Each structure stands twice: as C-alpha cells, then as structure tokens.
Length: 467
Ligand SMILES: [Zn+2]
Image (tube, rainbow, N blue to C red):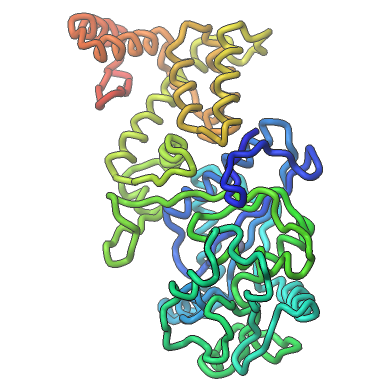
C-alpha cells in the first residue's frame, strides 16, 4: 500500500510499526452545530482508508475524538468557545448541545455507511489525561503561565512547523491582531493548553479543577492525550481535513513530541476540501448542506458516498445538486445491475474460482486502491468489469468484493423481479445509444417493453421499471 504522507510530502510505502496491527487516529467532530457534507467527505475518506487496510489484511484500531469542550472560534484562541456559543444560540445547556449534535453526527455517518470507530472518546471524559500530559510539558519546559491561561511555548519546540513547512516568522505575519488575544502571550503562535476561568471565561459553564486553578482545556491537547492513551506514544496514521495542517496538527505534534521526545505519527493523511457550486460553504451563502437537505432533494446518502469515491481524497471536490443527482442515477443503475445479477443466477452458490479475466479486474482494483487510494480509478474498474463478458457469478462476486472498500451496501440490495436478460438488453441498448445507433436502441427498447418492462433514459444512464 502506498500512501501520501503530508510530513514527507511524498507518496511512501505504508509499513506499520507493528504489522499487521495499524493504529489509526482520526480527528473527530466539534459537536456544537450540525455536521455537513464537507465533514462527511472527510469521514467517508477515513472510512475508505480503514476499509482498504482491512481488505489488505491489516487489523486496524480506529480511534476518534469528539470535541465537546474548549474549541474556540479562530485558530489563535481568540474567539468564543464554540460549545458555549452553540448553547446560547439554541437556548440549551452545553451538555444538551453536545449530545444533540453528537447524535446527529452519528446518524449522518451511519446513513453514509461509515463504520463507527473502534473507540470514540469524548474530550470531557479525558480531562485528567490532559492534565497529566500538560504536567509532562511543564516538567520538560515547554509551557508557561499567564493570568488567563497556560500556553505551549512554540519557540522551545525546535521542529515547530515541520508538518506545514511554515516558518514561525511567517506565522507571526499571518496572525491578525485580535482584541481578545492574551497580552502576556510570548509568541502569537503559542497556543493554550489550559484556560483559567477568569476574565472573558469567568462565566464558562464547563470547568474542572486543575493544578492551575478552575478552568478548561485548550482544543489541541485532547487529541494528543487521547491518541496516546488508546494507541500509544507513536502511532501509524493520523488523519484529518487539510485545514488542520498548519495549526491543529502542528500543535498536536509539538505537544506530543514535547512530552515524549518520540515521533508522534508515522503517516499524516489529509483530506482535501469540498466546495459547493464552486464556493466555500458558509452560513451567508446558505450552502451548508446536511443530511436533511439530501433527504429533501431525494438524494440517497449512499449515492453521496459514490460521488465522494469518484474524486481522489487529495483533490478538492466541487459539490453541485446536479452532480449529486447524476451520482444518484449511477447508484440506481448499479442497484438494478446488482439485483439483476442476484435474481438471475446462482450468485448464492459459492464460486468455484475466478477465471483469468476476473482475476485481472480484481488486480486492477487492488492496484488502484494500493496506489494512494485511487478510488476514481477503482470505480472505473468496477464499471468496466460490469460491461465485460465475464460470467454473472463472477460479476456478482467481484461487486461484493469491491464493495468491502466502496461501502455502497450492495449486499443489502433486495432482489427485484427484473430478469437478467432484461438487464443485458438494457446494457446493450445503452451501448447503442452511446454510439448514436438509434435504430438498434429502438429495437432493444421494444424488446424490453414486450417483456413487460419500461426503460427510462436519464443522461448517460437508465432505470428499468415493471410496466
Ligand atoms: Zn485533532
């Protein structure tokens, strides 16, 4: 398996620390608002990575955090606490807010058939672990106190910036002068490990006792503390959105390596952005789409998953409702093919063995996945395989095999009484249409209708219904 490692900026051969075990930490949601399709792209890509590793024989231990405290708006700790802000907005307690949005998050990931992490850990349940880690940083001379907070001293960590390649001087220029920035901070890039319940945070609802007084942890420390607690001081893979590279993940490295003196993560895997209609998702544009919006537009969440698979995780993806509908059509067609195959033959029987052509398709699929998760290529192999002349049994077998990584729930597709011969006619008709051979296409349509089925064309695909 080859994976792009943000740390080396290269595609590397994936060699876990303790093969076949793979320790995998994924940054989870901040549960103060609804999760949207941009987040879902990241979690689907994480899921594909995990499924791919499992497919290749690794045993993945997947840990994900839930940020239910301490994530301030703004990367420089200058803003309000997102949880408190969410609570105020919806007139609920912070704890209610966290529960409500955590439930919504999992409802969404379940709808996209994203396998739940082996361990999901909440920040609020790991305050003691964070305090212990901060203590190690104090002992190693990486932290300092102000009246308001306890900070990580980035200048003391010589390798600060190694993930993003940004120099501290560049950071200094990039940080804006925010009114809320603690005047006692030594460097603008220094980040809070612990906030004291004083000043602007004196009314903070979520707070705990610590050696530095009542307060609450900074956002970044939770990932270092929980990753180490569940997976050890050095882990194989850490993933997250590309927006986490310059601050959150840089800070995680500084805290973890500052405390242990060991490398924190072997492979950093980052997912690129999702835009909507060519623009960044934002409240003012009203384009922050979530699960309910898919339902309103009659888009099956699984077809959104298919849409995600058709772009590489390191490329930006532009979402439009048109592309979602096209993906829905493609998914409908795939479902019909699967139910046709299921219905048509001995697909329930154990396949004795794959023949040469099928083995080649399986190998092409595997090659695409092993090449830094080239899912668009893997999806193309699937369609080529469907169109090929291999037996229905082999097609069905390979679809189920590929779906271990795709996660389109193809196994759950119930049999519809559409004869395999109808599917074959429909596929031949599609080919004829593509070649603009409309005589042949019409003849095939009449044949299909005579057999009691109606075929409807939709762009490059079709649907079949019983008449
Ligand atoms: Zn994180």
